[in-house]
Length: 438
Ligand SMILES: Cc1ncc(COP(=O)(O)O)c(C=O)c1O
Image (cartoon, rainbow, N blue to C red):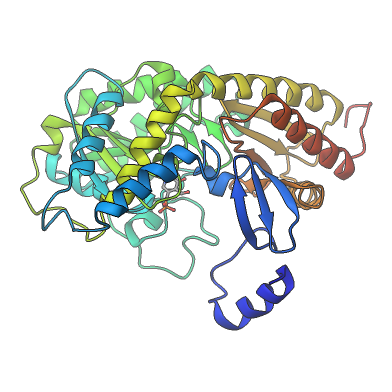
């Protein structure tokens, strides 16, 4: 079967809404590489959108899943809870940030984790309002798309959206709505604006939770300044609201820590996790302070497939691999090397407006000129050229003008160098180096 014949069959059989960024048909994947139906080999720096953090087909993950499914594949926790569910809950409670006792609820996808986090926050506080942020992505189910910021293609056509959702400005320093691009100043401006908005338009006693990504993923790989998250923590405590930390994309080692908020030594009230948690087997988690999770009655939350044994076994093996192979440190190393080289490249090309990141979660934002008009065309060209050259990259961003790097966090130095070389060739191909300032 070739890429072309699969394309033809797809056109007839698959709903066109199931869009693919790359016109290729993966057939096999191992470690940092993927082969398509025409046997072309690619270095994969998308890792299934931040899922295969420890590379494809890690033998320890496959072995753990095999051992589990030899025993049994499914018996819904609402019928009887399997041990892997409990063991994974224990492990997640242990690695969750902060010292408060935690409890965990397992479901299937990132969006489902977010939905459940909102339900928990509303019941636990007896309040309804949820404050989400600009540049946010929280999924595509009804509540999740209502919390997501970007209109196209996520929200348009799907109204009416869920009620009692408010949107505050994300501290996006490079495009600060308050004018000053210094991250610390942006953090101060953002928290001031947030408090003003809550006080004057929502009411402090109405807010059940603030929901925020510590690094806005689909919004453009924008790390929130630590000062902002610290101030948000304080504000939550002052007004009795909860902080839901959406770590679906940034968590599980991607940033060089289990959780992005670990970099700032902060403890959210509820954390959502999915994607890399289970290395490709559908699973997600809501981890919350025990005193919050205990507010819900037995049976108030549920899901047929939630915490399925194969997913839990994969997650336990993934977390073990991260520990045994020192991958938190490796993610930091990979991130530092890549960031350095990309900063050098930025000096050569004025169309690279910003290079930013946390650990191995790096965004390169492209612009047309000093007015910072988003340059989506260059991103499309870089992504296409890199693919031809055997490197899979992903675009991202509210304005689709950011390339996001999601390399496996267990890559070798040779694979890292190969990827950086292909990336820099693709950028060079798309942009003429300009020595004069634009
Ligand atoms: C931060 C964040 N939250 C939630 C989701 C939704 O996850 P899923 O696609 O598994 O529903 C995503 C997916 O990209 C995400 O990046």
